[in-house]
Image (spheres, rainbow, N blue to C red):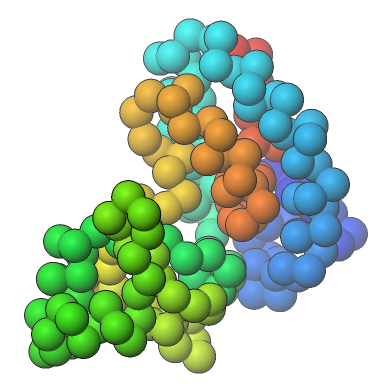
Length: 179
């Protein structure tokens, strides 16, 4: 698997240590329109084949990726956090939910919360999550490329190609498959 966005076409396994996130971001933005059109076209495809293709590519790509070498999702996004997530985090940190809400989260109009800063305040210097065992559901499930009914979240996948090099690679590989 040769990610097109890596300098010199170097193989994914060998380059993730030296991942160039600036180059990734530039190329993912350049491909957004093409990827958006492609992913929207998949909504008309056989759901089972689409899911199977995504899941196989997810497995293949993540066999070669150590997310700790990137952590771009934690550095650039503010995931949705539910009250149940907040309760678990508070218990883990031995603090009251109100304390951590005030310190780390913003309440959205729909009643959910988002992390109030990027990079995530729970991300340490080595890209480890200090609340990994109780991280929010949105973090546990990211990048959502191994879910059932992928056709229902292709709009999210488009956005995730701008955040996660693995998602961009999955989409690029998916373009080569006849569905």
